[in-house]
Image (cartoon, helix red, strand yellow):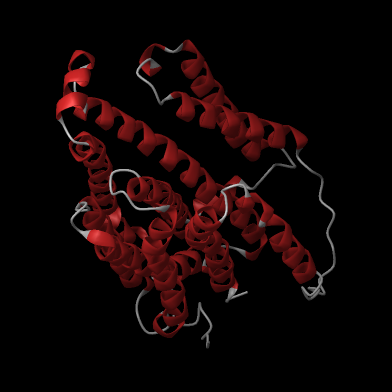
Length: 355
């Protein structure tokens, strides 16, 4: 049980390997064949996953049959679906006046509030709301949401930036992003030697600082910088993210009561996925707004198109991307002092781990 947080960290890092390494493989396939073959890749990967499931050892623990909270599940589907719809509708100049978006946001708030109230009163609930009474878990859940938003937004933005204003092909864009996966995997191996020797909060602060630095480097991207600059920023972000996973999960679950860990794991994963979706939606909105503000008025576009080279027309788009990276760097830096909210773990709270 003392290793529960670390096991979840390793499991979570493995899940993140797909989105991190996917752009590299996708870029190579798109350049060598066609983007349609990317979907065909799911078949062999699915077969490997099915075969791997057959080798998962049994836990040996008795199976406990618990009733399913159908009402809570329905409320969650409605709440998350409405929230995502509201965030997607946020993209566009008509959003402040959109009744549809306001209605979706209202439904999301009501559904999620109903889940919270139900979890305090009903006998069988979707999850135990008591998990948030643990300060370490609540703080870790927030940072988990933040990491999901920052990481997946850069995963979406960097290929578009590389193949758009920077002018890379799909393979070049994928290779420029591959150091992020290498940095993450290397740090995930090294973190097991550090976690028993260094305060978890120090590791978290270091990871957030490195992540903020990587985002600053991304905000300095330019056509003259070349792939090396972007690859360096990606590798630095990978190191920062790799420093965050294990300490964060260990802090979240090591002080959580054993009867709450299953509920905590579900909430923890949900918030990460919600952070991914919300971060991409919000930052895409900001990106579009900045592109529009950097563009010339419509009546000037024909003259601009006739007299300016494509590089000049792409400058507004490039500036919009770099501005978004600056915003994410600032957000990361602002949240860095929040690591002081975590309570330090006792030396016997986490068992030593070897790799």
